[in-house]
Length: 445
Image (tube, rainbow, N blue to C red; front, side):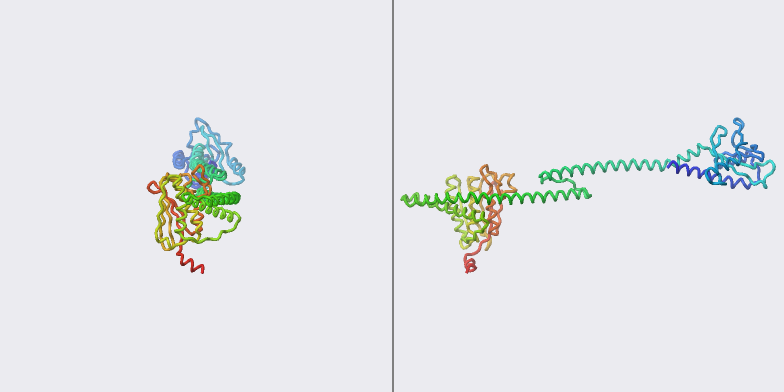
């Protein structure tokens, strides 16, 4: 910028000199003091005129206080200056110190045929170097100021943007590290629409997918572990239950007390149900599938009611059962699955509250629901979201296996199971498909 400004200033000086030369070179009038002063005022320069012998004839500078020896400043000096820059014959300037000031001097000769004997034949045009430098500075200041201010502005913006981006990148790095450490609940709070914002959204999506995948893997591992445990324990339990059932049958055969006979019948029935459950666990653990067993809906409800009445009496919990009369002609595709689901729901309700109400309703020709309601404290908040997952329980002694059985039974019977908290009561609703017994008989035929 400084070099360009100086070139502009020198170019302006050259143009002013060319204008003066074009004006004075062909002129025939003498260059008196008034003429040179007027020209100097108009052109902003100083003029010194010389006659043919080299004596100053006119000057706009005061040469009295500081005499000026022009004998050593001839055309040869300007020719040497032009030759030094490789442009022979070009108009070149030389530095001069005149009257206490520094100038750049240019020289031209007037046409001799038009001049009188006392006229000036050679003219020096002097330009003040301080003005040239001032013009150079003025020409350089604008690009300098513009460039420097632009650099400062861009640097400030770059620092601000870089700081903002570095903070966002650090946050993104921290969240990714948390996700890599197993905290799949970590999210990136960046709603920007730029590349980093889209990257943060992708990280959030990845975290959500990893969380779902981890839950699915945990669920599968839990189910696999459950099958392994069930296969090992069911074999021992079956032998123990078989021995207990045989002992009860022997006791029933030798006991003549009719009052105790009903209690023994209940115990035997529960043992048979338990043996059936264990047999199903053994079948599942071996990788086989137990065939469905069609049963009447009302029969299943009665069995579950009778088996849990004794438990309710022992726990001193009120237990009420009601079902629609229209359920009498309906059946379910697998009675043991319905029995297992209702048994778990009713048993959980008996352990949670002081009063339990079970109500079966016919929703349509092919669907019914069973509502199990208790007045207990409800489901703990920390397990509410994963209530039906294996090994999830709020009870200190619970294993978290009952409600997964309920959900599996609902899926098998093409139904659903849901829970809600209503008016200080916890309600579990089990829905499944049902068919009239006559239609099932026609299908089997």
